[in-house]
Image (cartoon, rainbow, N blue to C red; front, side):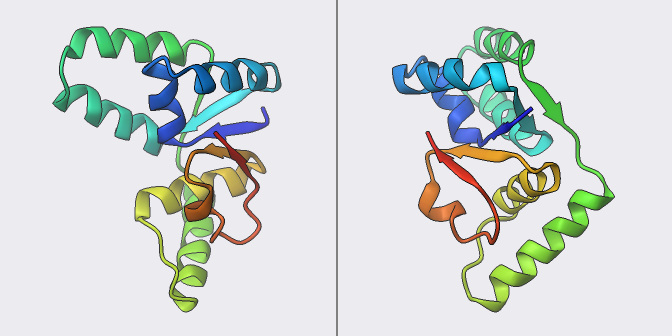
Length: 130
């Protein structure tokens, strides 16, 4: 596995955005994953969006070929280090994004996101533009 997808990448794929479909198809042979945080963020959209059943079915189909990375103590320690570094430099990002970044760092994965500027604040994080 080489890539972890940010929530915006998953949503773009699920909304059939051509650039997201094409990029993820290209990256898929190297292995794709999502953080448990992204899993929760997508489900929030499913629960509070329209046509819950259709969107949930689409997400479950997507998850058949994408691995879900759970949180653990090591990731939480990585989160604490990243958040502390960002706070010291006055460049904090949201906690959910910090957890997604910490997951990518923990597993040595490249983060695929449309928000490169935002995630580029995280030291040592490799980012692939969506």
